[in-house]
Length: 354
Image (cartoon, rainbow, N blue to C red):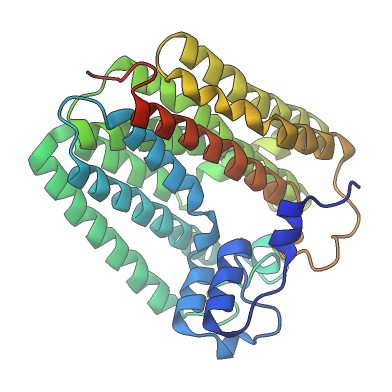
């Protein structure tokens, strides 16, 4: 196993003192600081852990991709973009809570299942009660409904189509009767949600039109987010296979699933370059190639396989590949956003819809 990078060492760094230290640790690791009992957590730390706020940057990047593509387009509204961005962040938060509720209710989440091992389970550890979790889900969905109705009044029926489709895919991912994750369709669900739905839906909300280039521009980021779920489901093969949860890695088997994940990662870079060549992404987004050194480390980890034991202090074990994939998303996704911001600030590239 290779030595951890500086970024990985920052991830493993202990929490600082006080509440802000706890918040920072929760946002880095999805966990409360290990030296602080669950019962002693302040309310902010508690809900950062319950909502898995550490993974929300995936959605933030999707919204920023859409907004930076849209900012120079005719009809762009910063206010409507801000509402749409808030809407998808709330939707992701609600999705995390709904998944925990559904998996607990069907008996999948137990104290021996990874969800309760890599971080405190909201219900099983008593972080919140089932009633509090349901209340939070309802409150978030009511807020999202209000945002959807306002955007509908400004932009028309396509906003409703994007929102309802996203809610359906979020619910169907784990909840009966479809339980898409259980039949190998969870990965396509994530690709559609974090790619075309979030990027195109946010763009449309901000601009009121949807050129074909936006659909193509959404593909690379959708692939990038899907690689995180593939990593997570590879980690969970020993737990999912015996329960009949047939995720795509369970169906493929670990060696082929790791190879497929390498393909997804490489496809992110290839589709980004294709989108640049076809004018769907402005040329400064070739900055994503700065993620290749991280890609090399990630591919090496996938080929090397999972270690028998976690590094000292590793916070999300038994997840391994999921954490590695997420570090790559933060680097590559951040470079994608940086390239789009450079194009938006300078006018370099092709401004969509103008």
